[in-house]
Length: 474
Image 1 (cartoon, one colour):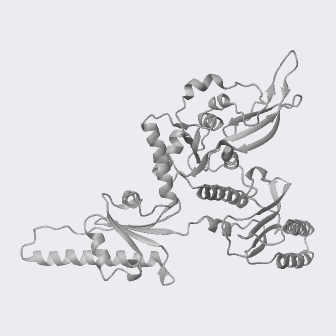
Image 2 (image 1 turned 30 degrees about the vertical axis):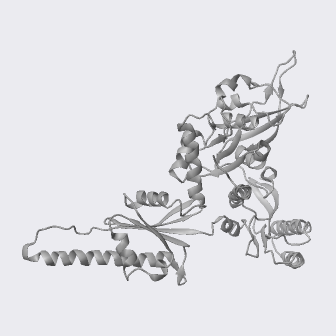
Image 3 (image 1 turned 120 degrees about the horizontal axis):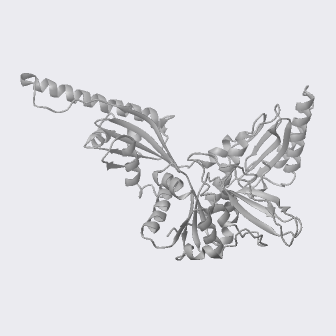
């Protein structure tokens, strides 16, 4: 089973919320320069920022365009009011986004978001633009540890990097080296010298490109480097004087692989799993592999698909929730206008909930009021602790992650004990309104399928703050 430390689980959730917030803010556009992005470092003072905003308010009063002037002044005033809620800058800094964004033709909506990052920010920024600037927030998501890989064999070389859960191929080239042979007669020695010369030139090129890619400002831009390859190319490269000594100093290990190119890159990552422990990409592969092992052994301690996974959560059986971060399923909360009864429908994105109820006791059918429509992945990020479970967000960038998204709907759970979901199917209330807000009409969802978006498709909806995505102004 997956034993996830509480602080690591909290960090994963915070990272997910910031990723959703960034996606939402990047899509927002404003009128003129009316969108304010304010970032305050931990060592800064609230009074200094308040004084700066007062000065900016005076400057903005001189904007000629009346529409732009009013929009900028309104945004600055809202930012000042938000800043008054803080007597001092939080330990990790403060980020505020404010302004009127376009939601349709001639339609605007006021946005006012403040959040405290889960890690300290080292940037002070104040910008008025037609878009929100999220680059410093995106930098928080980058892992501090970056591992470099050089895959070298007789057919070419590949240079890659592994950061968090992102695997990147930075450069790749092929080569055609002459093979050993017994032909040539008196010229056999000359042919051998030519072969060794081309081999030497190939290693020189590999070394030079490695220096260009992995050396920045006269120092390595990776914390560790892995050499992988077939035969003895990697050994010759590491021992050669052509190999940059600065890269040799951060060399982690050399591994033998069976393939070259991208397949060799994947194999090298797997062979270095123990040395790369803690890297998000490796942890994600291990987690999903554990989930697949439970299915292969038919232990019954697993669930997949929205319906079964939510049932497991309601029972308190879910130990580790595994959710694709771009899952498009939406959770609709509906309220009966007369009785006030609340029901929940979990449906794929784009599917409208059933809002007509009745007739009951001879009365006419009534329309239920849609109280809330929240992406399921965001609702789980807020409420997973109520079920006594941990939550892990995965991507489809790895082979295991892609299989999990395409084959299992992008949502599943590793359970504490065996659960027979077939025996529970008759226990779910089909279509009747329920008072418990967390009770879900699973069967209605199952009629529509898994609700997983196409691979690579973004989730709809965004994040409003680091504490509560459900309160998003979008």
